[in-house]
Length: 129
Image 1 (tube, rainbow, N blue to C red):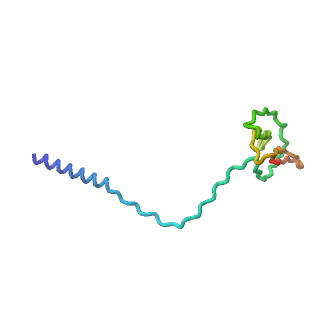
Image 2: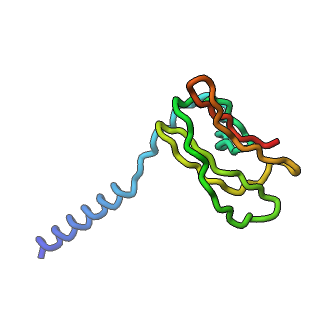
Image 3: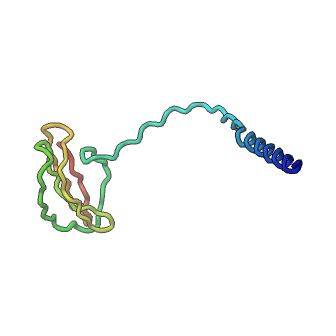
């Protein structure tokens, strides 16, 4: 019987030590104080067709003829159709036309165009006017 009591006491002691050891948490050291930096400015949203990025695109060959497009129904009567055009990315790629809300009332869309300059072709992007 004494042996059973010793085993039970030992088991209870070990359980108590385990519970105490698991329950004790060390407080992590506080991070070193840093000077607060000013907040960074918000990221700029991607440009829309009304925000023209001036970057001349020069291509060594003329664009293909414009593709015929079928205009879908506009989302509302205030939207304007922006026609599709040929874009250059190491080869010609068609960018489909779409409906777009003008940035201001009574503005019209002037489509972009490819113009020949010497032996090259230069893209003049569309714009709101």
